[in-house]
Image (cartoon, rainbow over all chains, first blue to last red; front, side, top):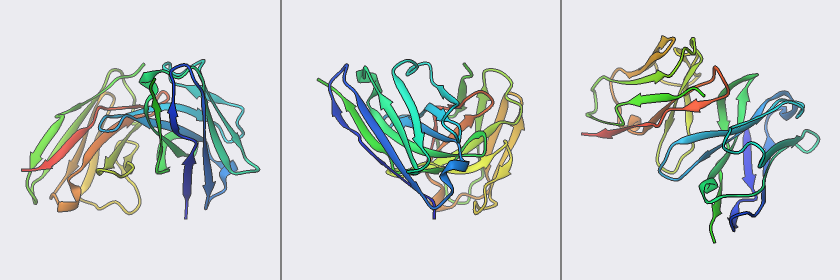
Length: 119
Length: 106
């Protein structure tokens, strides 16, 4: 059974940093592109970042480019999202997602970890 | 950036009704479109990809159509379990979601 379990969310002040982690199991992690998507509770979904299966090819939404870094450790079956210079607008639930092959279709989602940016 | 616009934002319907949700892309995305269902407190679930391909395990009352910039999701006979919010998503260039359509019980 595919499982994605996020951790690392919490309350942080504007300008602060957080690192999210996503522990993957039930599939060969190193074969899949992985993504982060966020959602403000009660609002829509926003794609944040993507990494290829090796971690060498990454892409970001314009709203987070230069502030967020997606990475992975295939030996630990873990995906990361380093978030720096956080703003109030980054407040959301962050989902770790497995991509389907090399296309951005999202077939398995973690339960999400909440991030609140507030003073 | 490719923008995705869904209509309507809210749809009221009854069990047994046939409903259709529309999604429009700001530029052509060929058939690179997916649909997701999200229930309150749950994560989104993939229903359809490549505009019309049903994900494994999804009931056949769900169907998708369209290409280019105009797409639709239809549910042929609404069941109580179908009342949820539906999102379209383009994956031609990175990924962009529509704003969602809340399907509620009339």
